[in-house]
Length: 141
Image (cartoon, rainbow, N blue to C red; front, side, top):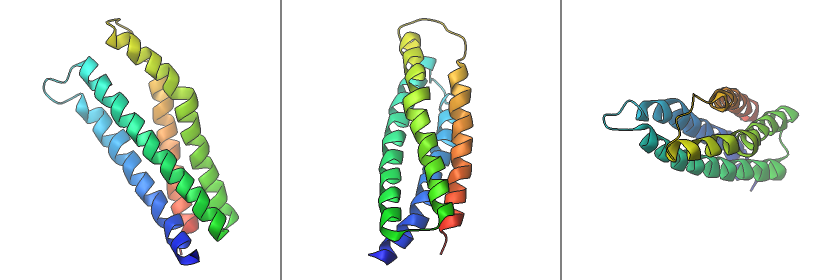
């Protein structure tokens, strides 16, 4: 069981990192450049994709915490994991609700300026990338 936990503690941050990089830094900005994608369509797709990403991230975070509990890794591993989980929680509980309210208004036809909450989400994504890299390095065999 310990060997499985050791592999998971190193592998899962890399999987999580890949998902964040692919969705947040590739899919999200590129979808609005596709022909025929309106703001409403892009927002609708984005809401679905980011909800799915956050659910997958939560599953990975729980699996990592459970693996770390079974393994008893270094303090550095726990710190980096704690940072990544705290960032994810902030995104889901603090930043996404105003983004959702704003997108609801835009989808209802209101014209609004760009939201500062998007910049907070992006900043947290960058910080999460750093935390996941730190976690993988700290957990490396």
